[in-house]
Image 1 (spheres, rainbow, N blue to C red):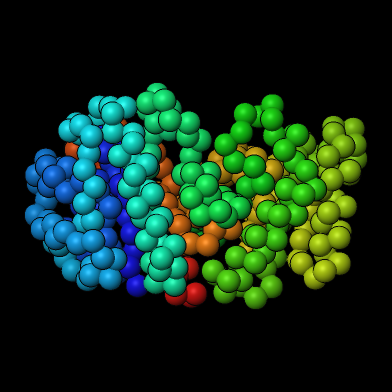
Image 2 (image 1 turned 180 degrees about the vertical axis):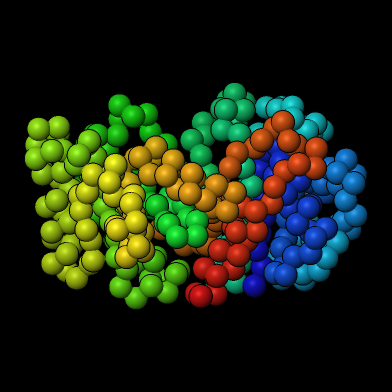
Length: 323
């Protein structure tokens, strides 16, 4: 088993996180897809004693304190902590492509863990990019379902990075059915939950208030849930999102399906920020990520916290091993 790590934006804290973890000691083999010169310079800036070993094989990366295995891909321009440079956007995407190729070649033994990217600077470079989730789906041919998890809560999303005015049109029976089937299947396959219980949010306030605040619950969500329950799925909803995230509901659930990004993720991040993991379901590979952004102001300072990285690495390990 090997976990591939892409540090993401080289001016951010993605390189800092893996170097700090390597200095402390990693208990699972990790291969970093990155520019080794950039990593060496960042380790020097951070005062970390980490020895880099280059390889082109995901199977030659034993774990160990103070050592980090690297598959080299060169930066386009020298990286300065905290200073974005659009010239390096193609490098960021190349690391993701190479890592994904290796995961597709070894799906049973290699997983991908991603550091934070900066969507804005990639788009500023003239490269259309909406996020890791959609980019990886394009490379693998999967149907991505974004799920964040922290101790005590998993939240999956019916829609991801959409402007709010486009969400309603995106809530269709076909999309919801696809997402629910993937969520149900991967909770079983990746997390060993035999018969998962899933709570489903309504789209509108008060889940539509019987049609007075919207009809999507009555016309789309409820009929679909009824049909899938008839197949044996344990689905509760549509429920008002303002009361769903309470102990009496959450204590007996395995995952929540929110209709849009900011309906479910603020609750999860309030509950577990720094310990949460971003997981992409519905792909032929295992992929997890940290739950935070590039934190440019912390890059190179030694103040970046590694909690979410360790959680992402451990979750990827568990998903790969089926535990």
